[in-house]
Image (cartoon, rainbow, N blue to C red; front, side, top):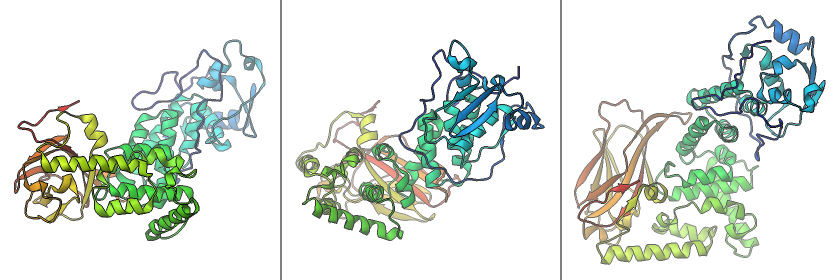
Length: 487
């Protein structure tokens, strides 16, 4: 019997995948997707090799392509393959089929129904042919279809190869919107957890910063919900960036054929939603039939950090996408918090948990274009507390300044304030891959006016500009001793 390369062991490290033979009857129902995954852009690649069995290719040509001495015919997707049980047994799917008391064990012709829309005849041909040769060429543009086929047929070795190709593409190749999203969906469906994590991180880095309509078209509501809920999502300035991005995303999901210059997508989205509001007699869009599918995504917005800025609050009100029932309690909570900050020395709970910081913190962002000194402030931070961010001599410094008295309601001048924060730095190349990362742990920040604190020192480090600066803040009460962060 020929020695197959696909072992019955599960691929280790970060690769998931189908198991070997099972005790239950084989079925082609596993691996189905709700969303068909589009192909990525193909790139020429050096083939990944399995352990050598027939380097001359004679076995592949004679037995697989010509079907010599075939003892079973496989039919699927309108195609027929004259194959051999001894080779097919390398697949966990067929090994299970040909064992036990299943009727397929003695059948000369086996009809397969492929439940996964990602599987096509070419992928089926490649997967079956891989059982007869020692070299398999998998390009990034075909890897999703081959992975889907290998998962249904329970071909662990081929699943692992697909994972390696996808990992190499994300890490080293030019990643496109189609590639990263299709890889994410397939990794989630077929159990490649490492690939899912890598694609998710790429999306967190690039979803807002790239301003790509093609990328927004590819992101499903389920994926968008996860991205918006994450405190790791990079924003350009403040939380309002996320709302603006969601408005464009929702418009492109509803109007997928829209094409135009980048600068036109937001005005066109505003015009479309204005017309829709007129047709629905002023009903907030998320309460309309078309808008209900997007409700779970918009529910992830941290509205408390959006409405504390007057221009942003006016845009939210004018757009009328979000129901008033969502906004009213947020306004109430923010007004009471503002009064508490103005008239007492407390703001927020005493005990702070990491889950609060990761899920409820305010996201802020900035961009260091060059290695030169600069300062900036994040609008409406902490009810007017003038936190100035300084970049100088390769250091990032937080400074509490009381010089600008025109901002806020004056609460920043009354006493020492406290927040928890988490600062992250990232340099992205043209493909959106991070070539430099640095972050702090969640820390307590407590500054008096005109006091400063060095947060990050980049001296003697190889840094690539521009650098995105992202920070998450959570407001804390004034206490004599800083409370510890609890897991």
